[in-house]
Length: 67
Image (cartoon, rainbow, N blue to C red; front, side, top):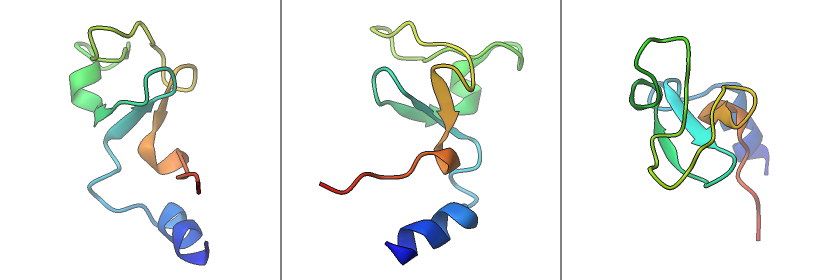
């Protein structure tokens, strides 16, 4: 668990521009989710999630769950 927390405190450069959809679970580049840099929506055709902080979150803010 300590390793997971350490990775959250110092995100890898590969995850800085990645987003996570809270509705469908998709992870994607932030560039794929916006056309204008202001409005973001999930690029998955079957999902209507939108808004960073609402339905979308930066990957660095999402902790993996243990099962």
